[in-house]
Length: 604
Image: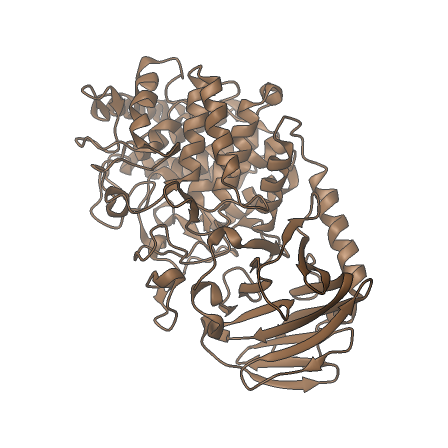
């Protein structure tokens, strides 16, 4: 039986991440990168698909756990009949290869513990060759080697399938276990295994606290904002600046359903909000790195622009299925890679242009080659904006004339004109402005449903879509416009248990239409933003605090929330859920009116 998604905490070294359950089991780990094959995959199967459990021999979930304040260092405490013990889990920011440090400390009495490492390489499938090398155990499979070391005495209880160590701690005694990765051709263990665990813990704690203290948010929800920003940082691939949508794959939005997707990649549709979030929060270096990643990724022929790229900017992310994995609560198939690279989504052009505009307004210089990219992207849109696409939700069926996609093509034209004016490059501004005006007229004519008094999901269809809540946010219409107010009122129909679904049952998305999937965290926060923008600040605050209340015990959010079952759904933690949380906190806080970057300063 799989643990609830909200049972998992995240640790990360800014190049990959691990998911740690309340029972002390690391059930998800991909090495050496976020998008590498998993070597611990019990999250999507059973313990036979790979896990590393470290807990009292008596078993059970920890009594309580928390991150050390303003860090990604996780403390889990077990109180047993014979004593109490704390396990501190962390991944130091990478120096020489990825590693996980698990530091055990006796708090009272005497506690017997067991470490069971069951590695399964190649997405939870391949049993490695395990042997002892010096004071370490190494497991090898193909190109990968995983090393396990310990700085104290343990009793080896291993078998053919797992490395099992048992040991006893008394009050004040510490023992550390360190797991590290190297290419299999290296004959020596990674250097982190030789560094004292206390040193690694202090350096990691100091790193996160130095980073967190830079947060500029000083409003009433600072703890939640800082935790979300730390999560966003943890999902950043430091060498390139790319931000993965989530560290997991195939956690379902519908238990037992088939729409299980791999989120370990970087989506352009999240780019402008991520950049805005980082800039507003005081993280200019991270914003610049994300911008640099984006420019490198989208360089080239605009006809080849993808919706999603790998953390290194890779274009080829072949989607495969893993039939040997039973899936989270039997939700199959389990997928690795994504065919979303081939979807046509007009909205990503607007996201890219909005991101470039936000960065320019924030004072980040725009080199000549980036302006060339602007002109190239706009040239493509001038020729193709009238075409149907697959929309924000990446519908895999027939293309449609999605309202949000058209709104974002207007955003592209608007931001291109603004950038041209700021840079004194107005050669094509007239053409871009004319395109924007035409898009605006068409959306207001074809995307408006008079009977419902609302913008709809796509031209000629009655279905409603939460993406219409973004219309005032991107500046397409002001919040006081009656069409915006009418849309916000109509979209109350998307409500379910105080949260917001992404579309109504007469929309075009099968999983959403049959009511099987949960509500979307980001959509619920967009609704809070729209309520605030249209003058309903108390309702907006209540909507926001409902989202805060469904974070797990360590402050993490998945993509979705099921208000009926009271559980998180979808891949977790979801970067955009946390981006939306930060953005909404700024928008609702009295201190949020200062120095907002981008064209929408004060537009909310």
